[in-house]
Image 1 (tube, rainbow, N blue to C red):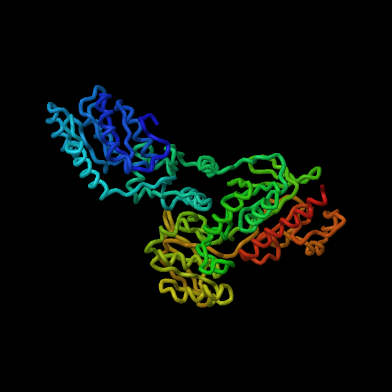
Image 2: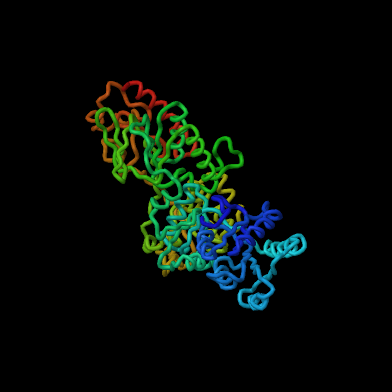
Length: 563
């Protein structure tokens, strides 16, 4: 940054000083630093255009300017015109004009033109009498209206934009702090666009902490700028884990801790479906429960500390076996060589095939917990489809924001599908209503969800009801469509492992080892499966963690065979 004394990290509010007289500028900065350096960053320049050029960069970075102190008589631009331009960037900053006795008329006029807060006649000696009392008063006034700007990524977009939702969901899933600025409700969003000569046609726009921004970016572009690592570091790995849910993260922790060169590949965000859960209350060792995001954060930190490499977002499109190695082929055609593989890709939520649902997905209709959109449901009418624990946890979380939450299920009650502790919590929450024997017929709206057509499956009575948001939890399907290798799957697409493989007619045509498959081994030697993607899995976070750690023990046995 061109302005003198600016540093890379500036957490303090700024006092910006401009004067083309270097001697006066040095004296001003000296006096200000003597009194205010502990609570304000004092930066300065003798070139007014330099100051103007820096304002946009400072604004995009999320820096805060508390006060402008500028000389009136400068050759390129006088102080008052500078302040007229500067207040477009920082309208709440205090404005002080440095003047000589002959410039007092201009200063008085500036009180009206730029709402000047004070004109300071040079010289100001002694500062204890003629400078500090004035600056103290102005800064005290400023502090009463000052709210610290968010330091990090700002996302500007439309609340009901599918692309904006995808960006927010990606950042939240990868535990990257960001601030959401709705263009329709936030003045700051409009100001950022205007200052950068952007319009609503450019949305969504992502502003980064270094002051740069991306217009309508892809997830990969955001990942690169946000510092995620989408590239591999080594030629050969001992084990590559495909999928960053609880099973994959557990495998990463145990693999790295036991000396294996370990790589974990996640196509979207670590944590899987568990990572989106608002509250997990039955995980061992956490008596008060914890959020899926917190569990994910702890696991990712632990895996990284022990040496697991994580690349995200990156998708695997194929696994090939050749010359004793497994080759992982990524979507960008990158090839990774590994001695063993653990598939922990988990499951995807099943889509609801009803009229209008796909039209508003990401614009009022969401699959899974979608905690990123919960605050937008404040005082709104929210509907949930599904009667499992995920639906119950989402209902409890959304009830903190929504006016009403309606759980719609085809059965009469939740007893056969949801844990008892959740049912009791729901019964004790006044703004949650369970609507049994109810199905969705159609979703309606203009640019976002506005109404749901519902039917009672017993009476066939239909109603049209106001709906601001719909969250869908109607079961899951395994994420295995990408697998082209001879890995045996059951009729639902889940990966078969261990002795269950012997019941398949084609197993002996594929399996050529002189031993039976290990408990979590697939029909391809050295390729294992763990967690919800595996047939007969328990579908519990603790079970997935157990299988992920157990898979590493079988990897060790396999690697001992092929040495």
